[in-house]
Image (tube, rainbow, N blue to C red; front, side):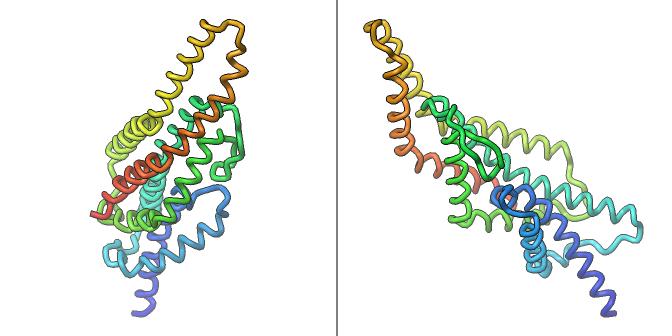
Length: 252
C-alpha cells in the first residue's frame, strides 16, 4: 500500500517537474544564460516538491502503456515550453523599444555584451532589458510567473494535448500586441528623431559651411539621453502592466 502511494507521488512529482523544468529553461530571468542549468534544475525540483500537494490530486495515474507515458511527458514538456515562450514573447516590447531608441539617439552602433543573451547588443536595448528584468524580480513578478505555471493546470489539464492552433494564435496575438506596444513606448524617440533630423536639414541649407555631422552627433546623444532619463519610468511602468496583465489570466 505504501509502495503504491510512494510510486504515485514520485510519478506526480515527475510530471510537475517536467512542466516546471521546461518552463524555467525559457522564462525571463530563470532562463538567462548566466544562470547555470544545475541551478535551474535545482529550483525546478524544489518548487515541484512544494507544488505537489496543491496540484497532485488532479494529476492522472501512471499509464499502463509505455507509449502513453512518453506522450504524457512530452505533452507536459510542450506545455511548459509554451509557458516559458509566453514570457519571452512578453519581453518583445521592451527589446523593440530599446532598438528604436538606439537608432533615434545615435547609440545603435555602440555595442556591449548582454549577459542575458550572451551576445552583443546595443547599449540602450541592453540597459532597458536588464532594468526590466531586475524590476520583474524586485516587484515579485517571478512569483506571478510561477503562480501562472501552477494555475496552468486548470487551463491545460495533464494528459490532454492543448490545441496547437490556439497556441499559435495566442503567440501571434502577443507578438502583434508587443510590436504595437514597443512602438508606443518608443514614440517620444520617434518624434524626437524626426524633429532632430529635420532641424539638421534646415541648418545644412541655411549654413552650408557648417559641418553638420560633427555638431549633430554629440547633440543627438545628449538630447537623446536626456529624453531617456525622462521617459524611462513611464516606459517601464507600461511594460510591467503589459507583462502582469498577460500572465494573470492563468490565475483566474
